[in-house]
Image (cartoon, rainbow, N blue to C red):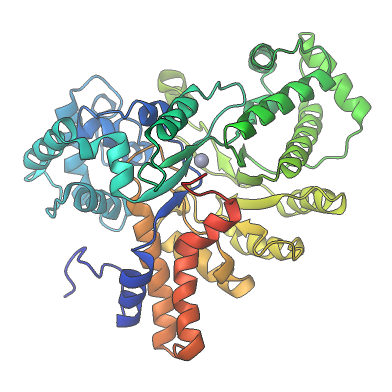
Length: 482
Ligand SMILES: [Zn+2]
């Protein structure tokens, strides 16, 4: 019997073990899309307890606890930190075969050096050990954890109206400390302009436009003022090191529209009116196009996360709000609109480097083949298929993504893993991904499907190092020395 979570966890062959230990594990991490709070990095936050770190905002765990029959009081309610942790510890042994079981123990092992399994018998000891380290050991602060996991660069997710004060303060600190040899993780902002096109809720959108006008110092009256204000903020982000955008979409929007129509819809909205379903789609189509052109002009990478159906439980939404574990995989017909959107940009010469992330695994092969339509030879892997995301960010989801990408594209050019996480303890997901990757490649080598001799032996090893680190470094053109 193979021991649980030993050093060769998920690595079923000696080739896989060699590839992982000598070529993947040693690479730094470029976490090019995450939702870490930049304030916690700038202030080098100390966590008060493992409950804050683990259960403060992790809706994956909340869903598992609800499914396991835990009362909401012990999830998002007013129970104490210890009571919440206890409720989670009692749930963990019911998580066999759910990725949470692996995440939990990888995090305990790689961050805290704890080899025990979490269950009701070990809960108190693990709780006390983790809390003691979090409160008294500097290596467990926000920055300490990033250093521990060898994180070279993180890209956060920021709204265009954000003043990026924490990014600026942190960047200044790096300059002042003259840490030229990458001792501190580089933190860069990323542009997420979703609210600027969320015209389905006209009141919230108008309040947002007012904020945007204030930070951009433009009195927004026309559509052209609106775009000027966004461009100013785009330039502001660029000056602070931003090189990526990210868009959260239900589906791609590529309705035909005319400039006159968009100006009319904008006028209607800004003057207190609303937009009907068709106008909303036209407006979103125009905004997606304009955002993409802005990104191309600045040499950024654009990312699209699409396909989530959010806030399905209206009772819980009105009680505890969004991002609390009531989202699931949506079902939209996307191939036509995605193709039209990318084709318009390509034919007009505005197609930036692009990463597409689908949430519905039924779209895997569709997206994997879409990439090839728009690779133009200017950059290796210009159009990327993003790593398994959210519900697909687990062994089975990663393997399916890697397999489809391998047979329908070029796995060698893949920019690899990202955490997409709000937690400073999520970095072992890179380790998990690298183990899954090395295992797949190792198995192919063992079966004689990939040569592992001479030139090709070097290529296989290089491929592992590239997907773990080098491809992302070159693609995003970011490193800790920027
Ligand atoms: Zn995200």
